[in-house]
Amino acid sequence: MDLDLAHVRAFVLAAQELHFGRAAESLSISQQGLSKRIARLESRLGTELFWRSGQGVQLTEAGRRFLGPARQTLAAADQALAAVRDERRPLRVDVWGHLYAPMRALAQVAARTGEPSLELGHGRDLPSVAAALLHGDIDAGFGRVHPPLPAGLTHRLVRLEPVDVVLGEDHPLAAEPALRPEQLQDSVLWTPGALERLDFLHRFAEQFGIRDHAEGPNLGLDHFLAGMVADPRRFSLIPADMPLPRVPGVRSVPLVDPTPLYAWALLWRDNGGHPLLRELVGAFMTEAGRSRWLEYDPARDWLPEPHATTPGRPTRR
Image 1 (cartoon, rainbow, N blue to C red):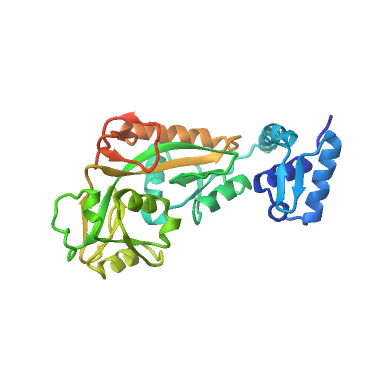
Image 2: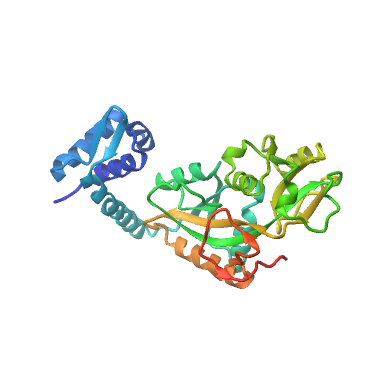
């Protein structure tokens, strides 16, 4: 049986979105056109792949069985086209979590590997990067991955970075050489946006009993820190290895017992795709071993969710 790849692609996008309108928009066709492609595929296969109800669409059992092989079929077709064209386009990588400067780690890995051909983008957040990956707009993402993650994506933990508390010099705890997270319970967590949309800071507040928070727009680190200093009760969290801009009145203090760790990960489609992706993953793991990026002691460190890590303690540089 010969399958039309346009029909298979329509099915995969509709299965990922579970919404014919969004899937049609991704393919730049009408919703009616998408429905016709899927109907022709179902006719060819002799079975229904979706069932429709007043609440939307869901995959049938046959649709769930077909989805994995369908993705593999599209990946093989893409690789075949790339081989014929002798494709040498750059690896397209989007990053998110911009206030925490994800480009630092990418630049360090690129410098160690002779700077592989990367085309860097700036996703808005994890959901937008995940959507871009599933639509084939990019090849990989880099940032903090947390559930829920859409089906069809794979991620690999590549760095656990200790986090410091930053506060103004007029904060009551500013003179301390180190702080425990619980000591911040009477302070105000300053966030670059709504707390419920910032998974790491939200979980930190819940875990350590931070009751009060205030939020401002994310207009860059300088603006964010200036807004924090404006109120002597405010604090925030910043990766310990990240250089701070010269904003007057800002102090950075280590967090201990436990030390929060920010988990950086690479994210990509299950089927891989770009030939440089394996090289990038390998380069990150080599750098993680060299720089001890994945060392973790559960007795002294805190992660919002469990990760497979090696024993030990992250080093500060």
